[in-house]
Figure 1 (cartoon, rainbow, N blue to C red):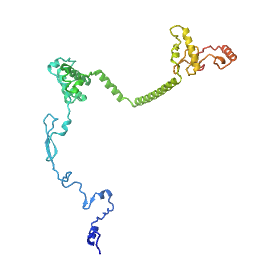
Figure 2: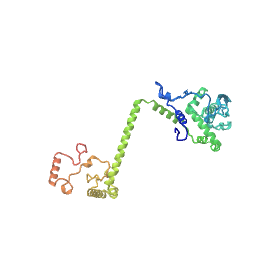
Figure 3: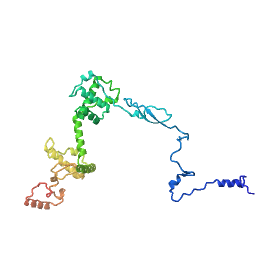
Figure 4: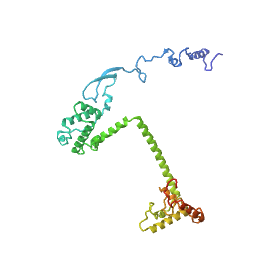
Length: 349
């Protein structure tokens, strides 16, 4: 019958189809970004015709108005742009103005302070510049030099800290309880000579050539490598001591390795040495026991190369050669005039 499912006629269905938006075609030669900015009525305006707020309502304009700045003490007035209808208050950046707490002194207090080569006029000038420039010492020193104060920056610092601490000590702890910055002045012990040396050394470091920096870098790298090797060697030594340890009772009985016997006679020390040698040889602990005539050394101890020159012994007494062969070797050494204990050089050992 030509009726739609909703009961409407064909004319209504045709109107719905006609309301569909037709897809716009991008003109040839126009980039996609520019085409996306184009509305149905043309290009979108870069600036709205009237100021609009977040809710769509129009907002007020701007006015050229004076403002007050509590950070300034000279009462000068400046102007800036502000929104119309907004109540003008204090300058918002005035809260960032922070002044250094200064110690002031009276005439009576100043008379009790040692002069140290400073006059009252120069001291007053120094404290005035410190307060005006917030203890920025390069600026303070420059301004004092302009006004005829021929003192170094270190001398100015020493005078400031000495006068401030002296005044605070006269007043006791009353001023120190009010401000943490003031309490720190009581603990300052400024040394102008040390400050001068510090600046001189820092200047030398900043002005040194590139060759010295490269040499220092190489030395630091070598030191780092040596430290790593020492740590590795120390760990290996501890591991070796744990695996090849001699009982403490036996080590206590051994005399000093330099050959000095313990107090009490050489016979007991020699017997103790022989006992330690026998115990170490029987246990196979790895302790350096090369010459039975010398004391026993624990692992990791420095020793002379001559300790490795053991007197030859027969096979039955722990040696590696027979008694006849040992006798022949002894005769040959005597013919060659080789001493029993030759000089411990690398060639001999």
